[in-house]
Image 1: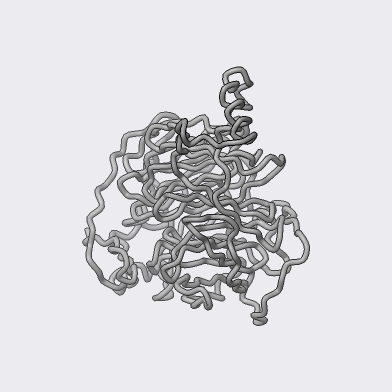
Image 2 (image 1 turned 135 degrees about the horizontal axis):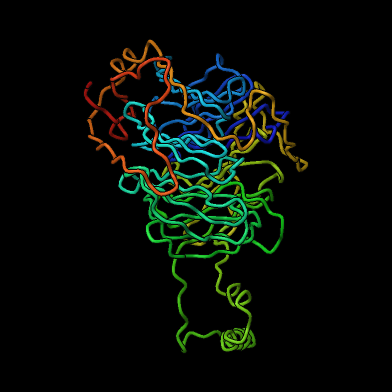
Length: 460
């Protein structure tokens, strides 16, 4: 989650926090550089890597468990650097004419999100395959990329006034469908690990919906709460796609269970006045306004997390750590909070550990005693004019690219088919890219620490 656009947290100096695609590591961008932590244990965080050469890192995205990281700094907010952190080399970089707001990766694609454009790179050689221009203003860089290679979908807002979701197939480079998800503008998007479901939330923040990614059919609807003006910060599915967690600017993280509600048989109807009241509501549902009947059909939270703060931007995730399900929350105060989660009973989740990840030497647990709002910062001259249509990015390949490719750790190879180049509706394909030098012909070789097959190709 890019915190720099909101000013970050001045006390912690954290500009970015996010989990990798399979929630096995945490990336933290700060004033002094960036850090990568392993999430293999609860009691301790193993620091994988630290870089203090690149300052004011506002985006750092790790590619699964590989050595590939995508980096953006506040000093050069229009430049994306792709690095091999184990070798300490820069593979390549691209410069754009507007500020980079988000970067998403899967095994086929790297997507760069700007305020009114999206660039789709081929991860094999980092060439720009396609650009989606003139998108509705998206100042927060809201988008989601499925990590499933068979359903390589990209979701982004289709409108800045209502909650429409545009789904684009980043493999075939074709527009797939538009989903009318909410009446209000979108606030959060997330695909499940299989790329079959898409969770959405609007700026109103009271209802979270889950749609089928291939057909747009509404599958689930959950009510987060009745309060207005709730900002949903993040949505995240569990690895098995059975649970969905949502964090916001309140002190509560909600976990919803994705199961079909069981219909009560006549012999299973509740007894007493509660049962009578429920049957009366069901019988009169056809006479009530649609908004009221929808409220009765919406699911409620299966489990909840109570954070020691509110008002701080944060990102949540569900993970299996030491063979137990956990809820993870990384926030702008520079802490990672780990909670137990009971997938059978649900209920309140217990805080079992919190770790400081902002790089401060004092590793003591510092409780948050007051809600802190993150004040926005004014854009400087180097950030570009808001809403400006961007041109082709400028590419610069590092001289050590070939050495980095040849020196990367080896592994089993998996071929990646080249996508078609047909232009989808309302988008324009990039022809020649304005580059300072020719992109390298060598392909990326990634070390996934034997957990995932690396993306490898032979040199052209």
